[in-house]
Length: 415
RNA sequence: CGGGGAUUGGCGCAGUUGGCUAGCGCGCCGCGUUUGGGACGCGGAGGUCGGAGGUUCGAGUCCUCUAUCCCCGACCA
Image 1 (cartoon, chains in turn purple, green):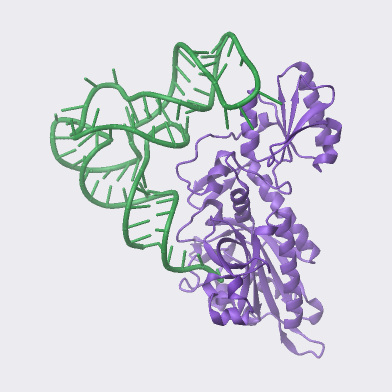
Image 2 (cartoon, rainbow, N blue to C red):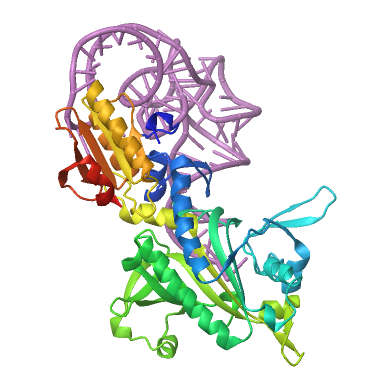
């Protein structure tokens, strides 16, 4: 993409209505636009990052044998009344609205009820199970207080997976596969070293523990006790001697840190499937309960966390796997010859499916460098008329070293 | 929802004890000089001060209400 085609532009001053680093940088760099508190639009650059994160997640989900769907955001209240979760006293962050005829609707904040309800049309035999369905969809939650930019919004993108298994044993097996898969996802996103599986409260979902995935960050609102050597943690909310013993955690190894919850997994048993009447017939023709699990990953929250933890004083710094573009291409000391060479490189890399952001604007070098840094593009390629034939300058966003390479070698270095 | 802070061109800010045509920086438009780390000069465009009501000869400045944003707390299946 040519930068001259991008309508967003960078700004030097931090917005006055944001304190959170992730929001400040993402707004300054033109990745997101704030619509209101806790609600952001994703602009061309931000949309690419969001899509890249989604793709990584999708790939892992599909490898687990999960099927992607997209459920509705508008929700009828009756199925939620069956489980008691329509009640504002039980679930206090619903957005609710109504049709002109007076019928009440909820705006989706999670999808256990509707996914179960829809499966009733298709599941009646043990032969139909297991079923794993997921979606990446915008969720709406009427938070009392939105905060921290993308970390806690009222409208956000989330991956939610629901599993339906024949029995507890099969559920456990799948549940553990999801945990592994989640670890893979966070590694690919560059967060592997600072993201911990964390024991947490099962909430109203279940009496047992749930698993959270917490990424260490000073911006986090969760307090977790981390066992670094064993790569495990426990949330402050369930931290007590009894639970430590139950989970066989060693108090002496635990260090208190702040984390951002970037994922969670729950074992739901047959609570919701029973309530909503989703059963299967076993081989003997007897009605059996279905064991359910639900598994979330905050996609837009991840974008905020990643922006936050990798940023430096010059701006964003995306991992190569999710950067909106791999290469920021600059031609300076513009003359016809170097411009021509830059065009050649742009076309070459683009043809090789490497995402290049070509800064073809008529601007001074300093501004282009500053923008390359602020946008956090992993590789910067500079063409200068003084360079010999095929030589270009290559610099990584997170390193100071500058190297000079032949441009036909770029592809192998970058990918 | 409790407490604290904020609201002045697109963005970031200043605006004395109420007083004259509401300033500055960034950005934007034009011309010229520049051109490897957010250049410089000259000339322009753009705001009625979040909203409503009130006090006053006179309100961006004072009072009341209200909206929105940020932070702390509570809450977060």
